[in-house]
Structure formats: C-alpha cells, structure tokens
Image (cartoon, rainbow, N blue to C red; front, side, top):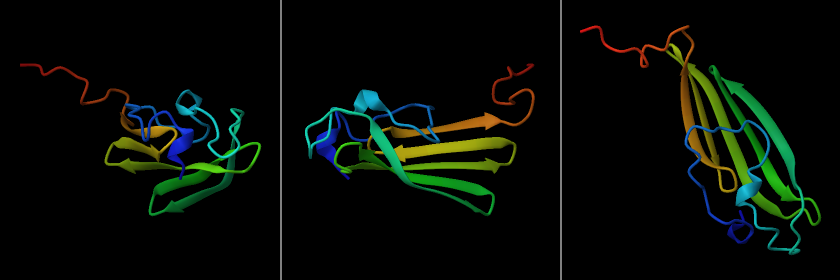
Length: 112
C-alpha cells in the first residue's frame, strides 16, 4: 500500500472501528496523480466464518485508481461481548468491546 498518500501510517483510533468509509483527516492526497479528491472504495468483500464477520476493501484514488490502503474490519461475539477490530494504513488501528447485556459487568462498581 502507499505511504506517500498518508500523513501517518496506522494511526491509533482508540475504539473507533469503521465497517465502511475512509478517514480523510489522514489522507494528504494521491502520491501518483498529486490530486486530493474523494477516496473510492472497491473490491469490498464480506466473509462470515465461525461466527466472525470479516469485511475487507481497498481505498483507491478517484482520479487514477491508485491503491492507497487495504481496510480490514472484524466483528465477532465472544462470551457476552461484541468484539470489533479495524486495521488499515489510512483509517488506522482500533478495537472495541461492548457488552451484549443491559449493564456491562466491567462498568459496575464493586459492592464492597
């Protein structure tokens, strides 16, 4: 993928996991055609294996079809938690875990 199109490789996004879209704040412009235009999404695939959903796609320059980055997003349910991860040179790296229960046991204060 292309480091010349980005401000920073794999920026830390905390718990912001994108299933689709692009993090344009990290995009400086196409290193191939030197234009700063919209980033297109292509070759999107969704695979569901063993309860894990994997979404992958390519970020491409709208003008010259230059490949900027490959985006990977995963979703799964582990025990009582929904687990999300994202790894992309443009959008960054992130992971999140959300309880499927009404009250997240990790958020409750101990009684004693």
